[in-house]
Length: 280
Image (tube, rainbow, N blue to C red):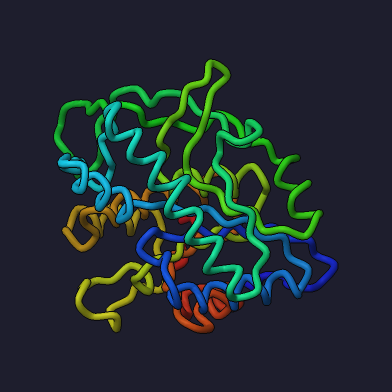
């Protein structure tokens, strides 16, 4: 599926950046793609996680990170860590790295200005986890996105870079899975593409071999790959979020790497540099 990059299109693109990519020199390929999209007249929003930063800070504080099938369990102490790691270290470092590459990023969180509202996620069974429902603690589900605020920032010439924390009217703060957060924003904007950028070039049959990348996945194929143990761990959650994005009407959802040219190649020719998720 070709993606319109003409200056008249005004298309929205949401780029989710994993915390493992936030560091000096690691974002050059992503910045290249973001610059090219903006030059073509597209409107870009960045969402970022901060898992590695949160894990490192958790351990420095004498705590131990807890996850179930790639989903972080966020108790009260962990929520404080996540706020410091995402809204602090990861957000500031991402803004600094992108500024060095010529991208005018404004770092903020979903709590800012009621940008992303969230509510507590009720206990539920997690695919790839135990059979019984799991309470993830201070983890939220997105209930509303303030798209007009994003339009205001982008029309003013900036690229919002949003840490995946949501808020509620009572002053609560909720940790939201960054892929879920990005998918919700992309759906609210009617985005042409959601790109989940990480340190792997897509979904791989063999995690140790980039040549085993799967170019295209449908919901039925995803179920089979999970059942066969090809898709495991944190990739299960990423795949599920990608497919949910397709169901919600995002034209294309991609998992791709952050190397030079990868972002634009994947947009122009889906499946050429990553994995594209499509309906059956």
